[in-house]
Image (cartoon, one colour):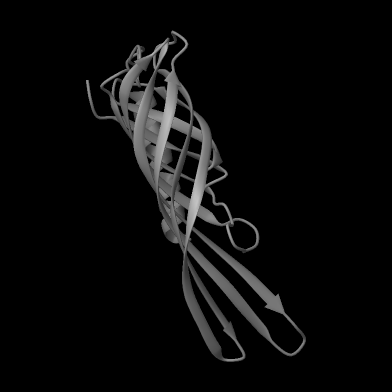
Length: 190
């Protein structure tokens, strides 16, 4: 939990810095053809196989804009994500806890459009990947562990706003390791 708070504080600090030192104009087409975007986000994870309440998810993605398509562009990329969940059982004679750690890697594609607003990038996309779900429980003093591998789909929509030519904030909704995520994006090209 301490690491999660540190990540949140770091993201808030970076966003504040980018606003403070921003020029009034972000890039005209942040995700235009030839641009690469590296993003970091966090939010409530998807409990694929169990768990209660809030399970934090941490995401890293890279999108490379490949083709111009109408008023926008199409990007291809990948994403790595992880989430953690627990479930506590209570009975008058005993108590035990199930834990899931999910780690996944996915390919993703998205269509980006900026609506002729400087610094704005909106997008929608889909993907597919592999999820490794590590399960651990302790019941009556016995520890059970196993890892399962699954194919997972992804669907998402998102928006980024760049305060400078290179740094922007990002929000994403969907089914891709997290129900929703917020974070920072960095343009690596052009």
